[in-house]
Amino acid sequence: MTLWFVFALMTAAASFAVLWPLRHRDRPHSGGSEAAVYRDQLAELDRDAASGLIGSAEADAARVEISRRLLAAVDARPVPPPALSNPKWRRSVAVVALAGLPILALAIYLPLGSPQLGDFPFAGARTPVVAQPLDSLVAQVEAHLAKNPTDGRGWGVLAPVLVRLGRYDDAVRAYRNSIAYNGDSAERRADLGEAIAGAAGGVVTADAKAEFERAIALSADDAKANYFLGLAAEQDGRGSEAVSIWRAMLAKAPPDAAWRPLVQAALARVGGAGAPALSDDAVAAAKQMTGTDRDAMIRSMVERLAGRLKQDGNDVDGWLRLVRAYMVMGDRDKARGALLEARQAVANDAERLRQLNDGLKNLGLDG
Image (tube, rainbow, N blue to C red; front, side, top):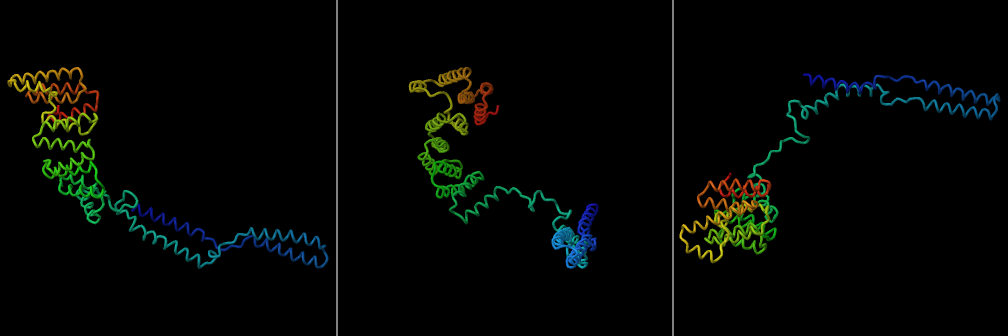
């Protein structure tokens, strides 16, 4: 009720503002009688000049002065607006002010400004913006591409989202269309190969390998293509070839490469992150050793690695090799001890610490 009372007062004030100028009726103005006096003076002057009571020159000067005063009196007189001087006009305006303004205000306010309506967060918003699910957005993009199949940019945007959703077969088709309409590139070929492998349950099939080889032909250092070619070698039982590919990747990679921990974990998985490569003579000698002697040699190499890391603890790859070696030997206590030492050694280097933690997680250790 208070709100409506305030609105009533506001409407009354608006109506009063319109009616106030209409309260005065026409009144005589003093300027009108003053002008009449000057007109009488002019007439009297003309009579005196005609009768010879005043000379011609004096009459002309007096006439000019009286005429000037007459004009000034006429200009100074306020002239009321003709419409408002008419009583019918005043009544019409009064009716509109008293009845029309409130009716117009209610007609506009009730549908647009009723206090019963919920408020809107910003001008022009009539429906809240709700974040759509990813599946709904994908469906919209697919509908767009069904009508515009040559939209290469659309296929390029859709393909990785389909991989994320696990729709690998659809992703393969999207990547092929992206290549067809956007042009060939190492990145697109590697992404296509990854989608083909995903559709095969993670197996690098002949088709997937062919795409990775095409990517390497376009860019020899493409990280994804090289990694999956190493994975293909591992799956084919060619572990040494996989190790060679992945080691070459790490040798060229910058220290902050995002994929470095993944490759390090792959090397650890196939045994490529263990002790340093042996010379041909050492390998031949190892083949002649008994199992006990080989174990002793491995332990000796591991101890030498541990000793080197105590003096130079910035070698993240070395720490990961040491931890994995202890795990392979079944000595998890030493593995955890090496883990703690490694973290202490690189504690002041945030990037090395991140690489170390990523590698350790891939080895199944979280500290």
